[in-house]
Each structure stands twice: as C-alpha cells, then as structure tokens.
Image 1 (cartoon, rainbow, N blue to C red):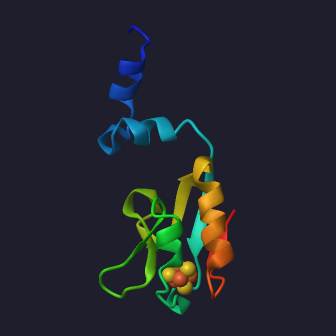
Image 2 (cartoon, rainbow, N blue to C red; image 1 turned 180 degrees about the vertical axis):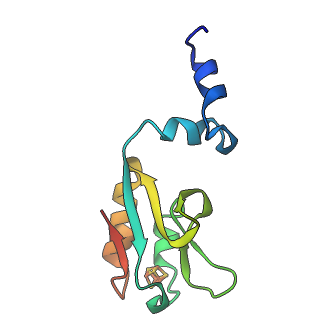
Length: 103
Ligand code: SF4
C-alpha cells in the first residue's frame, strides 16, 4: 500500500474524531485534572481562559473537561496537546480554589 497522509488518516483508529484528532495522536500531551471537582465555585475563569479544555457542565454548573479530551469518560481528567499548556496553566494559576492541575 502506498504510504501517504490520506492513507494514514483513513487507517487511523481515531479517524471518527476527525483529521485533527488523528494528528493529535502524534504530538505530545499533558495531563489536566480538576480535583476535587466538587470544590469548584463555578467562577468561570477556567472556561473563559481556556475553552479548548474546560467548559461549564450543564447539569451541576461545575467546570469539566471538554468531551473530546476526557480520559475514560471522566469529566475531571483529560489529556490535552502541549500547545495548550500556557492557557491551561493560566487557568490553574487563576483558579480561586486551586483544584486545576497540569502535569
Ligand atoms: S477556575 Fe476553578 S473554581 Fe473557577 S470554574 Fe474553574 S475549576 Fe471552578
């Protein structure tokens, strides 16, 4: 089989996430967590500073990891591309209850 970008994308097990999701498999990631999530005050800083990673949950109004970045479906644990580290760290530094962790 010819090795081409199109063939690699078409064979990627994460193709359903779209081409960007597939390419993200080949770049380094960082772990982001909201722990303990129940201590969130819903101030909104994290999802304002870093909407690529955080969002407000509609059921309990607490912060959660956006669905496409969650690990094992857990709303409080995610893996995000290193390119988002600065904004994730800004959210962690600004969180009034210090429950955002970036590793
Ligand atoms: S910055 Fe902290 S307290 Fe504010 S919404 Fe985000 S997780 Fe909750």
